Image (cartoon, rainbow, N blue to C red; front, top):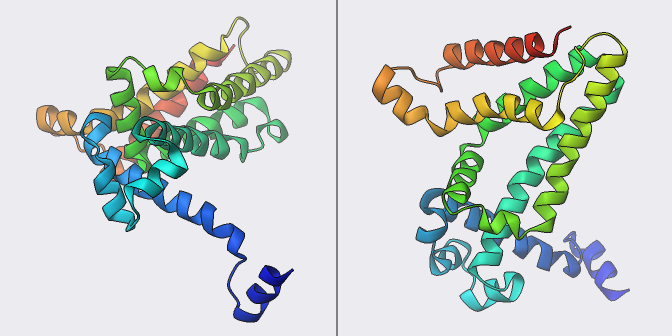
Length: 218
């Protein structure tokens, strides 16, 4: 295994990791480009310049601008779902599990405005690229399954009221967390409220946690 021996001698990872590293570098640059310019304004030549790769190489890895944009969205949605899965909600009492899920959703949206921006842009364009991605649909089905299981567990324990719908609960949690980031500039301009100020963020985090827990309470 010459590649493995060379890697051990030089301290460098095996050569087979290079394509994945290149792919991740292109995705990083595409996220920055599309996050700033959106899909329509994003340019593959600028993404190539950011990575010092050729446009031909980007097309080799992703097949074109649309597929590259889809890969960025898949990565963003996947990061959200991975963070949720890491909570290990099944090990927690239902109300505490829901509290932590709401807090995570708030924190993730606040920390990743590029996710909010690109989802907003995708909605402007009718959700065309998301609809064509089985990866995004599959990854996002997981949170509805997680919430459905949590709801059932909470109802059995008497911690949640009966009749809750997993998708609507997901919408309730996400809507406030998404809105305050998507509209942070207009909220500041119209009302003088800085959603990014630590005190404001902390207060709004408590607000959505309390609102969701009161909504599900018996």
